[in-house]
Figure 1 (tube, one colour):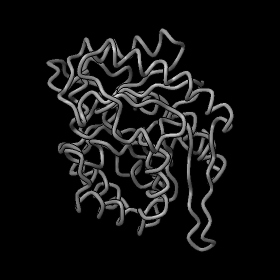
Figure 2 (cartoon, helix red, strand yellow; figure 1 turned 45 degrees about the horizontal axis):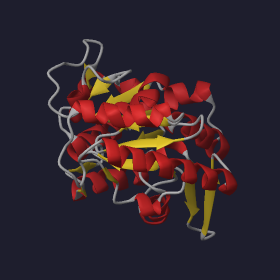
Figure 3 (cartoon, one colour; figure 1 turned 180 degrees about the vertical axis):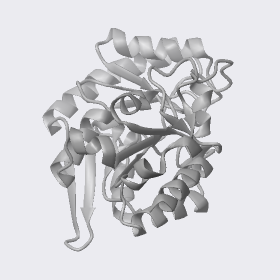
Length: 276
């Protein structure tokens, strides 16, 4: 699960240059992970942000789909060149109407349900911290509404694969879902994930059903919690650091960039803009 895997992606994963021009031309929606897809070493570079700006200015709809917390999603929806943001691995989406100065906040669960879930997650938190040395609650936990994020390499020394697996097992033994990102293990109660909320958002706000999504929607990511997106959408791209999870990904992307992180995202943006 950690970087440095000796496995390689399957032969079915093709370089981005093989993404057909006609298919690129039909893409209208870019759904993108944030950590290590838009960012490099925890920083959003000017190059990656400019790529977002250029895509948005060209008329593409941009939707970050992230494990990051609700508090961050409010800021992203307001200040970034995006049309909506899915947060906490599908627990919510926010969309800001700049003309009306109005934020739409849509949650998978009610406030009462989320409150009960947080009480259950607090018990799991105590168990993980007691049983997995070196693990820590993610620094952004205070801004979360629906899940528990355990840091395994963002602000702590990277944990070994068996420690990450132990965190996942503790979540699952308690009946929670668990997903491994490039920096955190996120756990929650509920039958949602990045894909379920993204599908709902596309249908509810943009009128995009599954048939239209086949041609119009592209997803780009880098880690195991992106596997449902890689599995469901036809146009899927991994930035080059997705190779770090070779052998761990349940489903791989269709194409992969040459560059890692934000530079890989900029590479993808250039390919989409070239087609238009």
